[in-house]
Image (cartoon, rainbow, N blue to C red; front, top):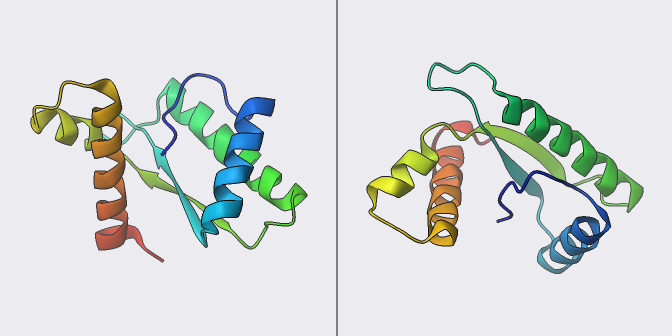
Length: 110
């Protein structure tokens, strides 16, 4: 789980992502797509979509194009994590990521 920090796929991120992907060998990478509560995109949504496109290109350029990148609505996952009364920001991000994957498995899995 790599939370949004404002800048993606700089050299440091590329090497970290490729190392994790090489070690874990996933078939699919789920990227949380943030929207407003009524489903409209935000400024961050655009950046996340750009990240997903860059990630697909990074995978292709490193002979990993068989790994699918999927965007999935992450609306309310952070709210869910906050409702667990977690105070540590890292733990909130982890709980939100777990919830995102739970929702993807339940509803969005292809």
